[in-house]
Image (tube, rainbow, N blue to C red; front, side, top):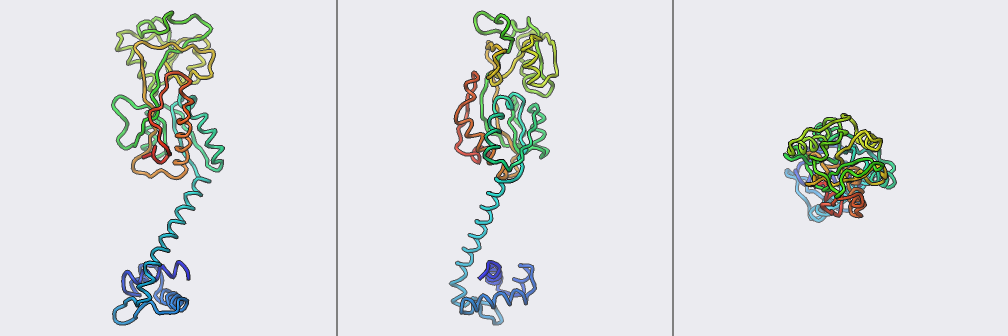
Length: 316
């Protein structure tokens, strides 16, 4: 007994015609008829009454639900194997802002590669808006983005991950910016700034904070990526408003809290109209496991917003 024979049997049982069943199955009628004759011989009983109208015999009625179940089990087995194979091999295209690449993804991708060495990872480091554009265009599978005040593109499914504070970075080799441990934007305006490139939410958040305080920024260098921003600050070129995540492991940087505090929300995003493939779900599983251990909180005021049990739940 073969699955192909069972497929032909169920097709004839559904349409009650050998000719139409052959058409549905995409085979010649003699091929289908021979396969069913062989099946009947193996089972030791006819499955059809081949009169003017094709009907099932009592043996056929008994076999039909078993055949449907066997075919369904075969489909489940194929799907399961395909999913396992997909996790062992494949590609996942991940996007993240530079600060999240530094503060979150470095450890996540290390563990993910250890768990799934056969999956090829393509990482895009950019500002949130270019990442959103990449998701919408289909050039990215998943991205960690910053949620703007007016929300994310409705074509995307988003799940909040982190709430992190933005603080002022200055060289630890120089005297503190403020003796009381915090600084206002008005006070920060007396110092030179290192400003990220256009398209990064940090730039927009910083400019909005300056505008709300009624002061103008004194920009020393602008257009830098995050790693360059931090290195320029360490070298004493200027100060920068950065997420608390980036201070971990950087003893040459001093963190000064802004007053009033500035926060931003990090979310994982994907397209709503495309089901995440197994490799993307596997990456989300690794990300969830990383956040469940809360290593990011040691960097400062960083809060894990949701503790989902699996990557599939995270992706919705």
